[in-house]
Length: 265
Image (cartoon, rainbow, N blue to C red; front, top):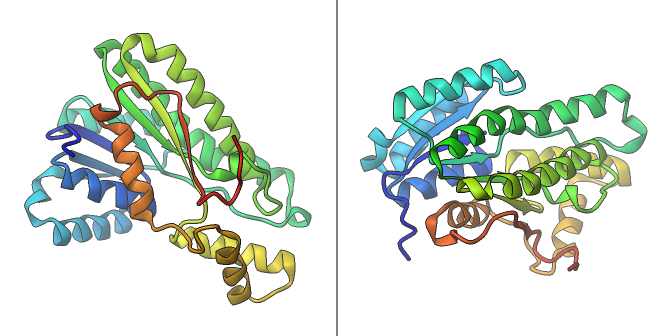
């Protein structure tokens, strides 16, 4: 299926690794231009090299910007830089930031603040200025990658889950507010996915249950009806579709991708 993304300009926060990098790969395959944003310049350089090796002909369609999106002014500045370099952004994929997974007895008030800063505000700081520009232009698509922990409270992910829940509400509200202006906003809710962040979560789970890391991983796979953890590319496929004109009547949706581990309507 042609997703009609040829020459579309896609800004991906958290684009240097994990799900964000997988999204960049799939957008490039569809002929889009991608701008990757990450705090770490070294990670961005590695991501650039990975993408170039995988799709050599796409080298001219990749740009990178190092920025800490926890700062609203920095986020606005990097958006200006990206649009000056590549023109108006057609698609925003937010995949930056992750709240640390922590057993409940290890939580502090600062941990709750840090979770909102790391996950909620990194998304809001980019989404707020860009959705307004998209609204003025009369078109645009935003896909927020928001962990499934925002729907179901997990004992090792309470601050992060709270940030995710807030992001889902903000996304649904913005979809309703900006739908009349031609902007779509959707959410993808990955469950356990084979990224570097998974190791941290499994380690916290192992501490909470007082079991080994290998046993925590075995139990995690066993809980999943599909009996396996998701690959980043599987999440990216859904993101790219929702961002595309093929999903032109899908907005305000929150797509569960947890392998049916939580059966719910």
